[in-house]
Amino acid sequence: MELEKITTLIPFKLENPKTRLSGCLSLQERRELAMCMLSDVLSALNELKLRTVVTVPDRETEMACNLFDGVEIVVDERKLDDSVNSFIQNSSPVAIVMADLPLLNSEILLRFFKTEGDVVISPGRKGGTNLLLVRNPEFRVSYHYGSFMKHIRAAETLGLSISVFDSFYASVDIDEESDLLELLIHGKGKKSHDYLISTGFRVDCSEKDPKAIRRYQMDDRKG
Amino acid sequence: MELEKITTLIPFKLENPKTRLSGCLSLQERRELAMCMLSDVLSALNELKLRTVVTVPDRETEMACNLFDGVEIVVDERKLDDSVNSFIQNSSPVAIVMADLPLLNSEILLRFFKTEGDVVISPGRKGGTNLLLVRNPEFRVSYHYGSFMKHIRAAETLGLSISVFDSFYASVDIDEESDLLELLIHGKGKKSHDYLISTGFRVDCSEKDPKAIRRYQMDDRKG
Image (cartoon, each protein chain N blue to C red):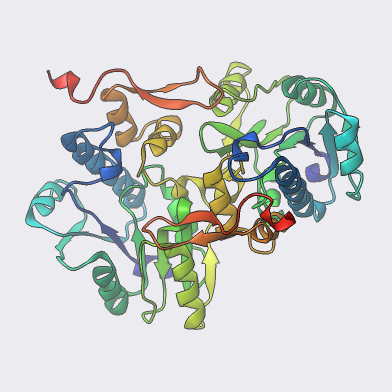
């Protein structure tokens, strides 16, 4: 079955992760949240028994990731695009799964991996590419600055078939404060959800649009 | 087939619609965009040949909606929740489809209508309920203030089975300026997408995160 041939790649770093959350989470908390989200992503993948590679830029992140079982950790100091493209060239079919998608589950991933197309893209908001499955070794990624549009264009230029994968849960990458609300609402049972709760976050429904609010300040719980 | 028994309900109003877009679209433009989005939603539904009812609060909106074929227009001055609940009580199975979901297509809707459960919810961001299928006449809706959570709780209280429907396209309701970007990126071929383009909007990818920008000011094109 083709599924078993897929290598799943998860780029991950612990050096100052999730900077856009620094207004509401300390550096230490952002690192802990990043680890919890990676753990959630790996749990969703785990049931599918695919080869899973976490690429990390440094030894410190490598050490932290060693606590995960059944995963290859590869230190790769190259830029994100270069690192991913080298995997596509040498190991396709490759699925690139972002490490900040805690709402993923194995059912969504299975549906994603089974979607036909030389290139399958699951969009995030703001033109992001949250999941990407590449079955053709000629394809090259280019993240940021509207990667969804760039990836569609790149596939078209190469004459490759493209599928857009439609998933709300896969579209929620935890990047900004407004994303935390989605994790709080939809993430029950996830490590990263429980971590946010433990840091004092909860959903405030007193206004027409719910908000994620924090009961106590950053790092108060450690005081 | 059960599908044919479903009544689809679309609440719609033209009186000062989409107020959160008033920073970038004039009242007249917001009304035109609202009409285009309703047209997109109706096109997506049209292929499925279900009974489709647009509920409107006033005669003016009724007149404007008369241009759509194959749709019942019902004037209902009651509040949103009361109007929807009366339909659920009398006409279930009822699907409530929001009028500001231009990225819907017939494939998504068919998948949605075929999803099992007494209550099927397709979430929007911020705890919203974008699509709701109710197969039990006892269920009652309560929109706003975190309707997704409230609808889950309401179904649980009644002992009803619940499915959460996972769709990115169905999750994008056009409410705020940041939502326009999603319509510009993913809405090619939709009336509302073309309308936005005609008012001068385009996607700016010069920064890491793309933005929707407007080339000329509100209503300049009419000067």
